[in-house]
Length: 209
Image 1 (cartoon, helix red, strand yellow):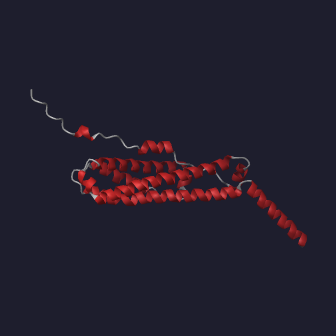
Image 2: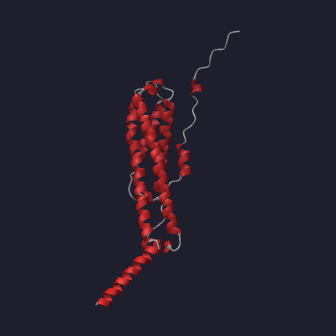
Image 3: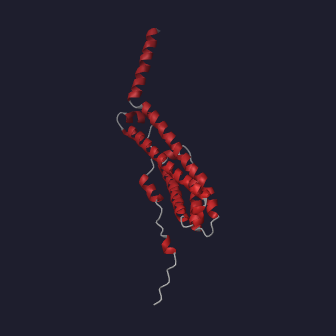
């Protein structure tokens, strides 16, 4: 009985060392890190979505504010928040692509709104609006940081799944490469157009000869 127990203990130890050497523990650690970073990304996107109604309500009070700009923000928020966020979303390349496109569209609409607001002195003097603006800009920065951490954690995870001999462990336990954010695509989406407000001003009357 003692010999059997010793043999079982030896086999258990060998199996543990084998799994550790083949990256099993690394997969566990990196997978948890990816999940944690994904949750932080979602948290920051949600924080932004929660701020937008207050921004919209404040801007609505400004006479003659560009209705098209305001409408785009409202529609973009509705589109971004209509996407059902499930654990499967981060594992589905097409779903993640659509999620990123919707969030990028909202970023672009918000950038446009904040830029247009510079042309309205009352909004610039409105402390409530300026506080919301600071919060939005801070949230955009947090989104960038959170997204960067997520991208890095997915890269680390994917490198492990493709490396030998860890790729054998990946096949054995069903660990597959994860889709990731496309930074270049989002940069193109979120870049706000350049607006020259001077062109909207009426031309000065010609000097009389």
